[in-house]
Length: 297
Length: 319
Image (cartoon, rainbow over the protein chains, first blue to last red):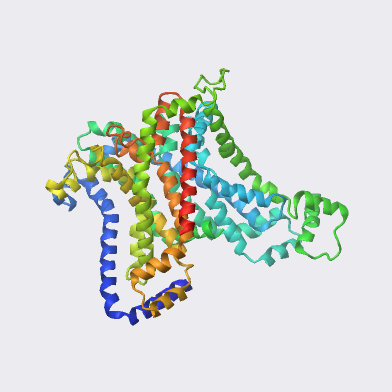
């Protein structure tokens, strides 16, 4: 925050010194920023417009909503093809399970790494970091063999959740949070005779709501948007999360539909809406904690 | 009850209340577990998980790539003999595998520089005083938090043969169209991924820019340095560690490419021009039942990414 203010002040001073030249340039760069923002947002606008068109209209005029060509017909079409409700429930259970596991594992590990001194703390920290560099493409085949073939967890929520249940950033967010709490508070509790479990449940947990919130938000988009792994695990349509059932619709069914793009875009809107809505509501938490806690670790 | 007292005993030296040296038994216990050995209990679920879901499969992947591994009915004991480098020679003499690595190289050559340059320029612009700054930050971040599967749908609609892009281009529209043109399909995928991931890298650079000392900019302004000069001589060197991170992360993301060629160009088309190594691993390993060869492709891919990351490190740290 203070940095921002300082940057702003310095920027103003700079601008004042070289006013005439830099004003034209900064107008230019603002226009470029505006064009860029348009390029980033237009596909989303087009997604909504396209999902409401009765007849697909890919002419430039089709980018503007035409009242006579609007209907919710495409939403009904995609719902009858992949059953949106069921897919959303599957996405919800998958995402909820991942968030729950990430939070519990991350909270315990983050708290211990920040506040407890125990043998092996250093190597635990190194191991936590290591997860982030293990590339998923190397794990893809062995995880499939183990989870789907050996443990027989195909078409199950557990099979979907397992590879995502721990998350390095979650550990870092909690660790960073507990490090910022005053050490004296924990010492006082110990002197008063509280044991470590009591300290965790009576002091650390009630205080960590902001960190908890960040972890929940930051572990939402991962599983909600994930395609490859649940795609490998689920063959039965009634177990597929929305990302998978929509992808299957795109790659196989769409060619046979009357207005395939309309239905695809309707499904895309339903898939995108929860993540975008969450981001818009909790914006500040998304951007700051996510990176800061990971880089400043 | 007795547990509670022993816990208090243990925690006392941590609080630093005893001036006397700890009793021998306690010292022994300290060395074995630390001041709060319960910490081991707190991290153990995480570590057990790590071992089962990351470490063991990692070893399994390498083991598999050196054995004749195939799918058998569950519970059936089958012999899976050691075959040395056989899977690797099979894979490395296969033109399709070379093709997929060449494809991903094309992808990375376009995607990584585009991502690094665009995200730094954007972060620099968004770090300055700007009207509607949070609107701009949101606009550039939205694609990153949206599912690939969802935005792929719109891009298909946009870049379709008679889609909006071609209609807008009129006679300049490429023939065959973008996604079915073997020269253009991979570049479109590379631009798509850069567009989708850019928000993440902008945020990464924004947090790096917070740590650049303001005095540097002020003295540059006093020296009358122009904007471009300031960007080149101050901003770019100051965020060098972040740049290394951006390059490596963009490369790792790119090497994991699967969803886009699977959906956007319908299964690595046209004519295999967008088949990525991970898509090939899926086809070889799971569709055609050669998990051992797929594992070998995975190992080769990871070795290559590690090599590329080391090259980045030398490049970024040298100049």
